[in-house]
Length: 284
Image (tube, rainbow, N blue to C red):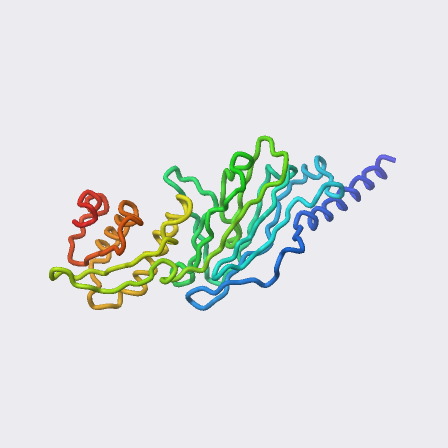
């Protein structure tokens, strides 16, 4: 009798696990298939179906056959970006969500971290040539008082894993994510070499997109936009003193920001390091 009970229990357990392996991956009728965006190197990237990480213990606390679908998502393409919205229900408000990015062979993902070393999931996608080709912007939560992203990491090389927590969620909230394929024109309306009072400058007229987003988004955009500047202008014979130009560029971004347009960075200025460049109002 004892062996029979064990057999019955194992059969039920395997059935529950089998159901659980399919059930958490709910995708609503709103989900559009085969949506992708094109990067600068002419390859496509996209966001896969978000999945809810579950443990064996969770099957005994929430019956997947009786509860609502724990994860719903929808995707909209806007220009060269994809916006995916994920519904978080009270039953899934303390969970781990995996968001797979469909990238190309040789591409890799790097998370952005703030001054405290914390990541909210914002990340840059690089191609095999170490050139940035896209951004996964900081996930936005409908009401940050209800749900918080407490940790993020990269798993399997192509998936952003978010740990979300809530103290007392009573209704569904939306987690909005954006994957953008970026280019020089994403950040600048023009960039040209000029001469002012005998001094050669690279004059960059920037767009509002460059300055938008969370702290982590801005960290991503600073690095990504500089990558685009280097790629577009570094072959010109006027280009030199890359480190000094980068410090001038970062200084403009972090101090003057959107208040001045265009920015002018000058190869002839000495390379004195970022701190001294800031002390000299970006003009060492």
